Image 1 (cartoon, rainbow, N blue to C red):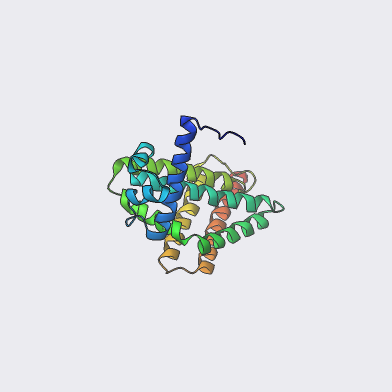
Image 2 (cartoon, rainbow, N blue to C red):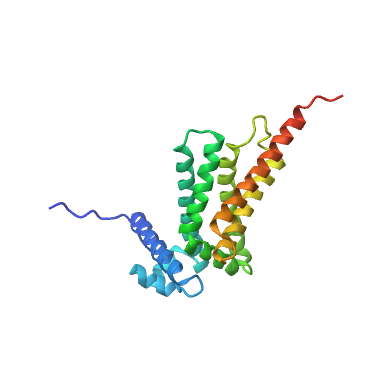
Length: 216
């Protein structure tokens, strides 16, 4: 019989951290952010409250890790969907539309959690700054995807591209909130997101044409 591997301290801590995040995800999604305590998360993971505080300084920090995991998984699904196509602009737009519809249909719980988390950190400057950093990383991921759709010759470092990326992402956030609030149907959400992307791509294309226009 093979001897059981003894985990190093770092491996043991990483496993504990992962188990706490998994337990937090289960309880946050089932009961909501405000109704879930750190003690309940510790019990769900079979750990002590001390183990929670040795890995996360607060409930907000733990919740942010849950949301980070969901966001990364969601973006990974989008990248996979785009990569599976033929690379044409129409295919990428179809992949994004299909991905968005699927996310809206299947991820109501994490979207509600994200809204609850945002409310919880409004009056916490420290955690709000950490959240802003996390959001900026999402913006950069969104920028990388958006750049693939830009018209040839577009200035990828210009302020108009930054406005386009933030405009599309902000629209997505608003549509997600509208969906979980029950005021935005999925089909309409897809329509609005697609129209927003088309608007910015057309505007960027117009900017490219303007730059290339001969002067008198």
